[in-house]
Image 1 (cartoon, rainbow, N blue to C red):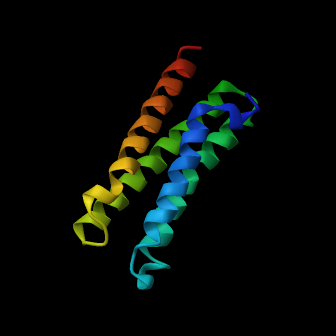
Image 2 (spheres, rainbow, N blue to C red):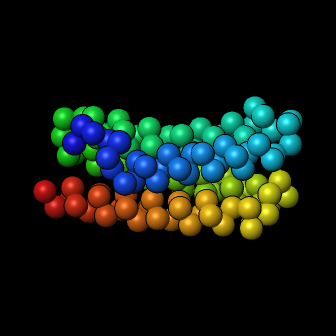
Amino acid sequence: MNNYKELKVWQKSMELVELVYKLTSLFPKEEKYGLISQIQRSAVSIPSNIAEGAGRNSNKEFKHFISIANGSSNELSTQLHLSIRIGYINENEVTEIFKLLTEIQKINYTLIKKFSNL
């Protein structure tokens, strides 16, 4: 499973990262090294872990990295909800991101189940 770029979940994750970077450009500049950095790192972690897992030598390792990507997606979701709660963004600004994030999580859970049965 070396060609991670062909994985739909990786492609959608890369799209998610682009949306997150555009969104965080709207945040207050004083959050550059705080919440902006955290949000961007957790978003980037999703496709990065998918790619790393795809490059490993076993389905077990791939499953492990998909699980890490899921953790990062939950981290990102939490940070975005926090951003809404403190007023940096509103729910309308993250609707597309949350929709894409849910889709990525569903694909990841399906992959985890698939590799658990092998």
